[in-house]
Image (cartoon, rainbow, N blue to C red; front, side, top):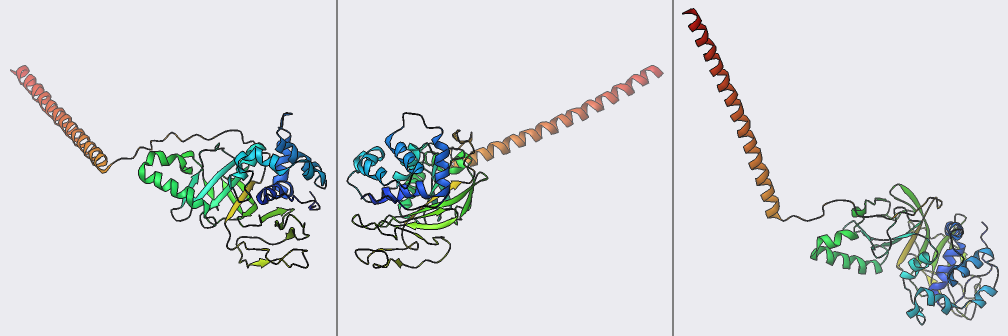
Length: 339
């Protein structure tokens, strides 16, 4: 696909623009949606129709004029029409609307816990992994703290949030690699959303790194999308846009991939793999045992072992005794015959 950024979304809802950019300009996500479109029925919602039109012709300015941001937001979150701040669950709601399977994953680097949002459908091989890493995202702490409180209060209730319960294995999550694995399926980092006031998002188009920034509703800047290496493994500096070169109203447009909270989007490398089966907890006994129960169990096992030994010895003695009696009987019989 060609990386054509002639027409860029410019609604006054900052993060709605970021999500639209990720859907229509990220190569892997665009390809994924185009495959999903084949499964969409004819009674599509407005959001699906909107994305479909953009993917067919993203150079058409009129699409944004014909469909208002309030119409799109009313589908995602009716109560958020007046909000312009970051609402993380917008991302998963958009994927759900577009029939894209996803896994919301919270990684706790302190306790090395992989925590799943069980309110969502849990898929064996989702199209997308949404990662909230505790080293990169303060929002994740809210969910992680909630999990830890449940864990301390009731282990049996907390275990259902743990990825181990569903037999899900991860590689590369702890160090937020550019490529991770979920149950041996490969996923590549495609988007990085920043929670700043410009709706900054890093995305990939034809294996090149770009960033999108929202500037001002009154001016569409030629710097809204620029090439920029947003690799999270390298050191980033605080970068500001030049007012004159970017045709901006002021010099306050800056961003940093070093400090802002980040939400990472990983896309399955082969999006044609079916992902239509959900995970259920493994058939394991997750009941916790107290020290008394453990001690009692050990004592019981020890007692059984002791009784088993006694029984074996008794049988040996009995057999030995029977053998002696038999020999005596034979000898007596022979003596009688001689007489």
